[in-house]
Image 1 (cartoon, helix red, strand yellow):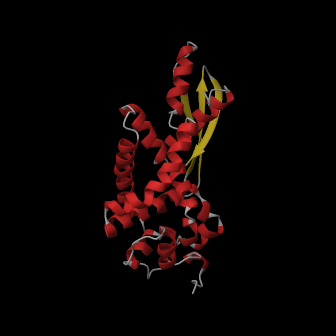
Image 2 (cartoon, helix red, strand yellow):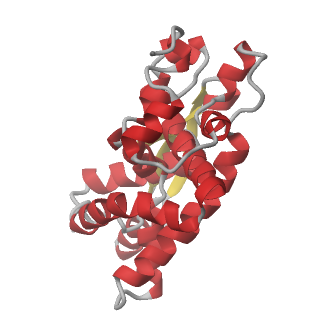
Image 3 (cartoon, helix red, strand yellow):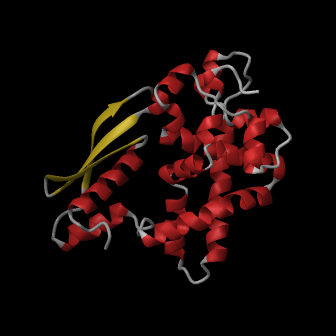
Length: 240
């Protein structure tokens, strides 16, 4: 039976595990991985949110993705491996993985988050995906994580290489600026909005006192990277 409350999501932890063929038997652990702190604020009976599992999952992903890349690209130099790993564990990419497995349907969110589209918000999807990885590691070990993530990495890595998404846009933009005789690009935070747990930063990138691109993100680093990508697009350099 589906849960009655919209903030519980359309899918129970048991249904999620069965659909994704995940070897869970500890439903409290999986439920915690799906629980955002906004849900905890409205449901005092819930014991813990997923932030600690998110922390663990982030570390597990760094290792698993690094090992996967090392084994799948034996001729790739260290610098390229580092950039590929960064592209594969980037917030938007992890959120895309979450969308591919329809993780949003199982997330436990507060009503406010639910009503404002939290089930498709990249930051929340990324965090929940990391928490799911952390819970899977605790429950079934590193091999279970590798079995789960490998098919996702196969498809994503091919797309990243095809679209040059492994290239760091900030480094690429700086190389262009220096080749033109300009100083290094300057990144300015234009605006900050939203609650503490879901802040959005708007950043402009300036070269020679001219705005070349703008970007937004849930951290200044993400927003600056988006601004650099926007500048590369305006300069027709994004696919070179």
